[in-house]
Image (cartoon, rainbow, N blue to C red; front, side, top):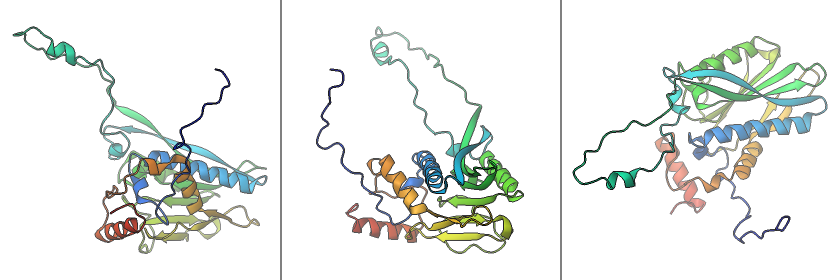
Length: 280
């Protein structure tokens, strides 16, 4: 009946289980999960900035677009190894052939993928009065960290463009694998990094090194001269993304996450998950 309320089973609608980790959840780096998390992080940052900075500023999600072809070293992390193909089930026809008949090999119609158009979002903080870009915030994707990939080329081009402009640059790297930020000094020890480059202090910048067992930091997002930095709590953004997407429902904490862990990381994760009751 139209408009009639349908009672949900009692087990439905239960509150989400938060991530068992104090900081970045390494299981979310899984290539199957990361694209969704990336979108949620971008959306969460955009909402938080616009909510707290209006009416002086607003934030928008913009995209870098590039083409990934079959020669792209980053293609394995873009194109799934297995594509699900819907086709007619002809198993009955095969087994019901007359005895003695010869089975012939039939071709299957498939799409040949030569190039893929890849869209990678970022957040831009906009001056509401002049509509100029004040700060660019990038959350790195796996392809941005693969040497020689189209994604890395596109990312570096955008970073160089911003570094030569009057806009601030914020780079958030929540991926353990791949190439790290290139700096004039040796990077401090860390599993994840955040880099902030202010216009007035280049080439110097601030870098937050983050260990697996540490909460994500509150990062200072620079704005226009005369305005205080905005304090962006990355842990709150991550926690909200985890809860809203229900990542606990798809994550198996009884096995180690991809990409591979160091012996030290694996030992800490095992000990920590046991303390959370997620491993026996």
